[in-house]
Image (cartoon, rainbow, N blue to C red; front, side, top):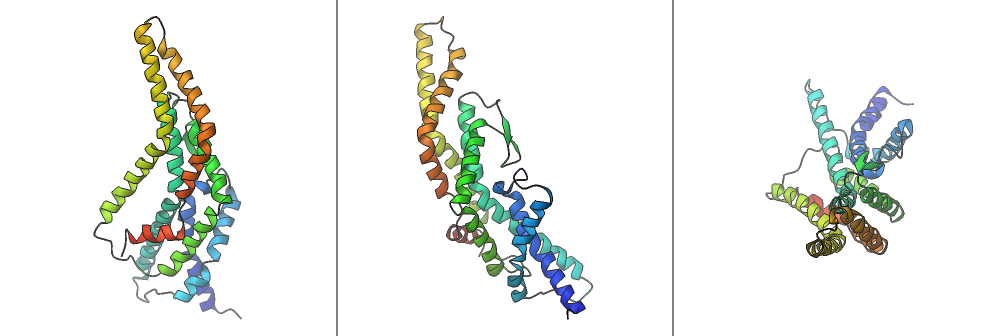
Length: 264
C-alpha cells in the first residue's frame, strides 16, 4: 500500500530529477522541436528522466524541515537547470561547429543571404550550414552520440547528486570559458580552411584577369565561380569533414575532462 509519504517522496523525486534532463535536451540541437513536437516531445523527456529516478532515490532527498524549504527547493531547481544547460552545451557544441563551418563557407562565397530554415537549431542558417548539421545529425545517432549523451546525463546524477550544491570553481574557470569560445572559433576556421583557400585562389585569379582585361565584369563571375568550386570540393571533402566532426562529439571521457576543467 502506498502511503502519503511515499507519494510525496516520489513526487519530489520526479520534480527535482526532471529539470536537468529537460534543460539539457531543450538546448541540444539534435533534439529540436522540428523533429519531435508537442506531446511526444514531452513524453520522451519524461521517459528519459524516469530512468534517473532510482539514482536520485539512492542519493536521498535532503530538504530542510524549516519554513525556508521553498527557497532551498528553488535554489536546487535553478542549479539543476544550470547543470542541464552545461551538459546540453557540451554535447551540442559539435553541431554549432558544423553550422558555423557551413556559414563561414557560404559567407566567403557570397551567398550568406540565401538562408533557409534549419530544423536542428530552429532558426535560419546558410545552405552548407543546414547540409552539415543534417548529415552530422544522422552520424550522431548512428555513431552512438546519443548513447554517449545519455551516459553523460545519468553519470552526472551519480557524480553530482540532485540535492548537492555547486562544487568549488577552478581558479582558471574564466580562462577555461574563454578557451571554449576560442576553440569553437578555431575549429570553424580550421575545418572550413581548405574550401576558403580554394575560393581565395579563384578570386585572386579573377582579380588578375580583371587587371589585364578591365572590360571583364569579375563581380558578376565571382559568385558562380566560387560557388562551383566550393560545391565541387565539398563532394570530396565532406567525408573527411564528417570524420573531423565525429572526433568532436562529446563522450563520457571528454565530458570528465571538460567538467574538471571548470569545477573541482
